[in-house]
Image (cartoon, rainbow, N blue to C red; front, side):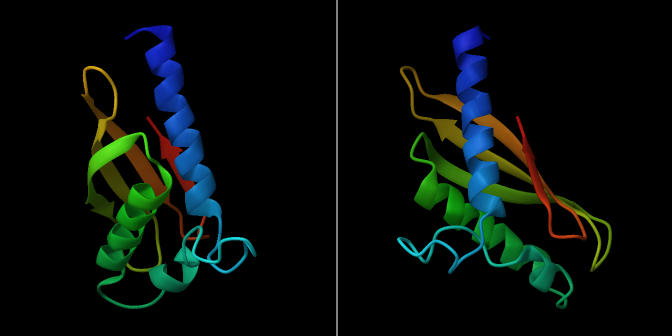
Length: 116
């Protein structure tokens, strides 16, 4: 992979981490920017992983135009109230288009980390 491609992938990961760590209703110019507090969802009940998966997908589709055909899969959930891992699979809008996989980890504290 070329250095430019690596930088592009890192730029996408950095952007997604900013979006995922921003909280809805906190950006006056765009109230739907970001995610709900994952802490609230993590400590909720069964189905929290699916709700987080849906919200991650919606954020990628809304705020990362360099990706299309987005799929988000839960790859590990230790138990309710602890760390969860998701894998984001998409197609990088480029010539030629290419697949990209990004990992998102949500800690019990609500902190979200994104890596390529």
